[in-house]
Amino acid sequence: MSIFVTYSHKQSEWVHQRLIPVLRAAGGDVLVDTDFKAGQTVIGQMDKLQSGAGHHVLVITAEYVASPYCRHEMEQAIKSDPGFAHGKVLPISQDGTPLPPELSGAGGLGSEPIHVDLCDDKKDDGWALLLKSCSLTLRGAAAPNWLRALDQTRTHLERNESVNLVVKNGNVDWRLWIDQLKETRFQQIAIVDLEDPRSVPREGLIAQILRATGRSNLAVPAPHNDLPVLAKAFEKAPRCWLALKHFDSVKHRGQYGHDLFSSLRWLVMDEKKLVLLAQSRAPIATLLPPQHDLSLIDFKTVELG
Image (cartoon, rainbow, N blue to C red; front, side, top):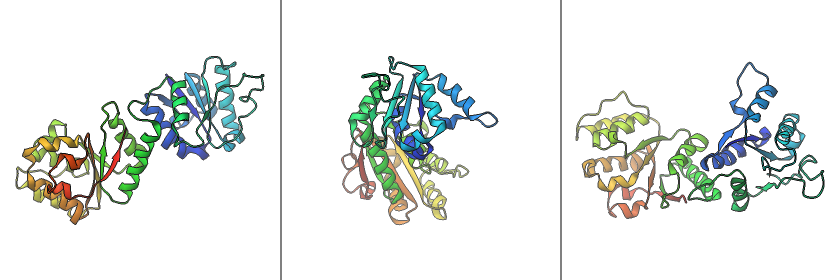
């Protein structure tokens, strides 16, 4: 079911970095005003987009209540469920601002819709109520944990610290989590999937790394002539951030060879040309021998789920 989110642009960062990622992670089809097109009226597009929504999430703040556009969207939401009998209107208290009269029970005791308190969005109660009200389920991870993992990882990457994203719970949609990390937190990260058949041969993995980091014009020769190409590709380039999905596969890829791992460690630790995000089901320390070259990288552990 589609969900229309109405909010003041003063809360744009919170809405796009916290609210919408959680709704989409739980399977919601989210509609927002960023889908508007040029050459058409704002109100007309707003009404058309909102009219097709099954739920209307209202992010109530002082700025929202003061905005004519926001109040118009609120009125349209109320028209879709005038008596609040079907649970289509879902007000969120985001800064403690009292609900406007249209939502605050002006029609008598019990006539107001149940509102969701997300003034402190690090608590799970409000998120759980919101998702339940939208008939959504965030599998394998509570919403605060999902968001905390995004924020922790961004902080580490901004500090040029490599990260081991550990996902022990098989129900967690960590692929979507990585997509959201790139979309909402750290757009410059490149992504390589070690389960991609093209990444299974060593020269294939190197080619995938070069392609993902914008160096697809370089031909990769067979081992051991491939490593000088890898080193040269990053020689005069700025630092890159690289996510390696299904890092557990490394344990079974003897064809990669010790010298490839040594080269990656050199690019991370010595040359400081790479920062890694390695996603795995188990901590890297349990996947590799203590003296393995990649074990020498100082990975910061972030757990999801």
